[in-house]
Amino acid sequence: MAAQPGGFDRRSLLRGGLSVGAVGALGLGGVGAAQATGTFATGRAGGAKEAGATAAEPRIYSTEEWGARAPSSEIVVLDRVPTYIVVHHTAEPGNSEDYSLAHAKQICRDIQDYHMDGQGWADTGQQFTNSRGGYVLEGRHKSLAAVRGGKQHVQGANVGGHNSEVIGIENEGLYTEVDVPDALWDSLVGLVAWIAAQYKQPVENIKGHRDFNSTACPGDVLYGRLQELRDAVSGKLGTPSVATPDIWPLLRPGDTGSRVRAAQHLLRAAGFDSLPADGVFGERTKAAVAKLASSHEIEQHTCSALHHKRVDETGYLGSDLWPLITPRVRPGENSEVSKAVATLRRAGGHLAGSGDLTALDWKRLLD
Image (cartoon, rainbow, N blue to C red; front, top):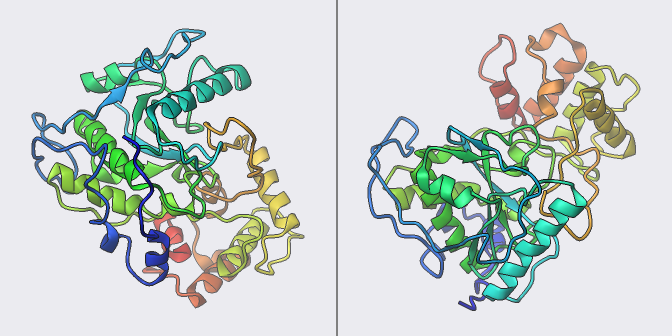
């Protein structure tokens, strides 16, 4: 199963104007892709709702098969299913060209060592690991049995503040600028389809790590393909595709433009009076965002499988911080909020009504 990376650059296609959905049919039929063996009734959200519907289980190597250490304490098994299926990337050790099963097993051992010895966790943080060669492996002990049963959730440690409601998949590699290999993509589609079927979760509940925490994980390229992943999973499950969800953007040091300027106005409204609204995410904006997170006791969450070195994501402004600076007020009730709204509307942001601003209003303004 020595699968090689794909022969085309999806990132270039996207830059060239093709939508994510338009490339969704490319590279889906290869190594590691599970085949759906049943169909699902279509709910309002196009999700998997029918109790008897199934999708084929992909080949998943158990913790015993890859030589996992025993957990240092009892694994928490919840008597309910997770709500979200969350996509991560491991970031380090990077994009290896070793696509072997032996390498995939070693990645799992390395991650477990880092999580137990470096983080002090009971076991590997994620429930499943997906290698660049398209091999899928169980992460935290008991995860495979829990999904097979379809009624329990092994609580992991891969999304800050949400581990009781998410099941995480670590995809080997760093996908901030390059695309995933076809083998990894195919196995990811098959694995997610199976999990969604087992837990009867709608495809709109397929998320990225950054949908919960202020982190770049799973990388701009892989994150940019999440709608394509939802579409591919819908295809396997026989359900209609769902609309792209409204999301909070991720802003980072070095970013510039209207969204940064709007964020600075909102930070000023939240008490950072001396912060300039210049549209440049510099050191002062980074410090303000970091202080905002600290004052609300929101921990920094980099990708949990990063096991050789850490990337500094201090001051990233993402999904867990936007709600703190986007007030539910009418724009005219606060001058800085009004300036933020005006900035985003000039840049093409959409605001439907004239009442109190909701989270959905802010997401659409920031889109």
